[in-house]
Length: 93
Image (cartoon, rainbow, N blue to C red; front, side):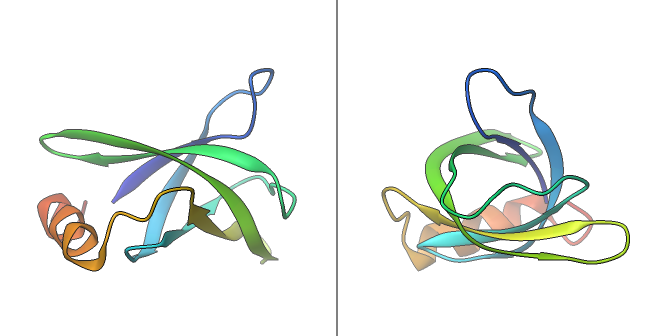
Protein backbone atom coordinates (compact mmCIF):
# COMPACT_ATOMS: atom_id res chain seq x y z
CA UNK A 1 0.00 0.00 0.00
CA UNK A 2 1.24 3.46 -0.85
CA UNK A 3 1.37 6.20 1.75
CA UNK A 4 2.40 9.82 2.07
CA UNK A 5 3.68 11.40 5.27
CA UNK A 6 3.72 15.10 6.09
CA UNK A 7 5.79 16.05 9.14
CA UNK A 8 4.72 19.68 9.43
CA UNK A 9 3.33 22.70 7.61
CA UNK A 10 6.73 23.74 6.23
CA UNK A 11 7.72 20.29 4.96
CA UNK A 12 6.92 18.50 1.75
CA UNK A 13 5.15 15.16 1.71
CA UNK A 14 7.31 12.06 1.78
CA UNK A 15 6.26 9.13 -0.37
CA UNK A 16 6.32 5.81 1.41
CA UNK A 17 5.29 2.19 1.34
CA UNK A 18 3.25 0.56 4.10
CA UNK A 19 4.99 -2.49 5.51
CA UNK A 20 2.50 -3.24 8.31
CA UNK A 21 -0.84 -1.74 9.34
CA UNK A 22 -2.66 -2.21 12.61
CA UNK A 23 -5.53 -0.59 14.42
CA UNK A 24 -3.29 1.72 16.42
CA UNK A 25 -0.55 2.55 13.95
CA UNK A 26 1.42 1.81 10.83
CA UNK A 27 4.96 0.91 9.75
CA UNK A 28 6.09 2.84 6.66
CA UNK A 29 9.38 2.96 4.78
CA UNK A 30 10.46 6.27 3.23
CA UNK A 31 13.67 7.62 1.72
CA UNK A 32 14.10 10.27 4.43
CA UNK A 33 14.14 9.96 8.21
CA UNK A 34 11.65 11.69 10.47
CA UNK A 35 12.75 12.18 14.10
CA UNK A 36 10.98 10.28 16.86
CA UNK A 37 8.24 12.28 18.55
CA UNK A 38 7.45 14.30 15.40
CA UNK A 39 3.72 14.87 14.83
CA UNK A 40 2.70 13.72 11.34
CA UNK A 41 -0.22 13.44 8.97
CA UNK A 42 -0.27 10.02 7.27
CA UNK A 43 -2.33 9.38 4.15
CA UNK A 44 -2.95 5.74 3.17
CA UNK A 45 -3.85 5.20 -0.49
CA UNK A 46 -6.11 2.45 -1.83
CA UNK A 47 -7.50 2.00 -5.34
CA UNK A 48 -10.80 3.48 -4.06
CA UNK A 49 -9.46 6.56 -2.32
CA UNK A 50 -7.45 7.59 0.68
CA UNK A 51 -7.61 7.76 4.46
CA UNK A 52 -5.78 10.56 6.27
CA UNK A 53 -4.82 10.16 9.92
CA UNK A 54 -2.90 12.20 12.47
CA UNK A 55 -0.20 10.60 14.54
CA UNK A 56 3.41 10.74 15.63
CA UNK A 57 6.67 8.91 15.03
CA UNK A 58 7.28 6.46 17.89
CA UNK A 59 10.36 4.69 16.47
CA UNK A 60 12.62 4.70 13.42
CA UNK A 61 15.31 2.53 11.89
CA UNK A 62 17.66 3.41 9.06
CA UNK A 63 18.96 0.94 6.47
CA UNK A 64 21.31 1.69 3.58
CA UNK A 65 18.68 3.08 1.24
CA UNK A 66 15.59 3.83 3.32
CA UNK A 67 14.20 4.75 6.70
CA UNK A 68 11.52 2.63 8.36
CA UNK A 69 9.22 4.38 10.83
CA UNK A 70 6.60 3.30 13.33
CA UNK A 71 3.73 5.78 13.52
CA UNK A 72 1.10 5.72 16.27
CA UNK A 73 -2.31 7.12 15.27
CA UNK A 74 -3.85 9.90 17.40
CA UNK A 75 -7.17 8.07 17.16
CA UNK A 76 -6.96 4.29 16.64
CA UNK A 77 -8.84 2.95 13.62
CA UNK A 78 -9.32 -0.56 14.99
CA UNK A 79 -7.92 -3.84 13.73
CA UNK A 80 -10.94 -4.65 11.54
CA UNK A 81 -10.67 -1.32 9.67
CA UNK A 82 -6.89 -1.76 9.31
CA UNK A 83 -7.38 -5.22 7.75
CA UNK A 84 -10.05 -3.84 5.42
CA UNK A 85 -7.77 -1.02 4.19
CA UNK A 86 -4.84 -3.38 3.69
CA UNK A 87 -7.00 -5.85 1.75
CA UNK A 88 -8.48 -3.05 -0.40
CA UNK A 89 -4.99 -2.05 -1.46
CA UNK A 90 -4.36 -5.57 -2.76
CA UNK A 91 -1.13 -7.57 -2.75
CA UNK A 92 0.73 -5.00 -4.88
CA UNK A 93 -1.03 -1.95 -3.36
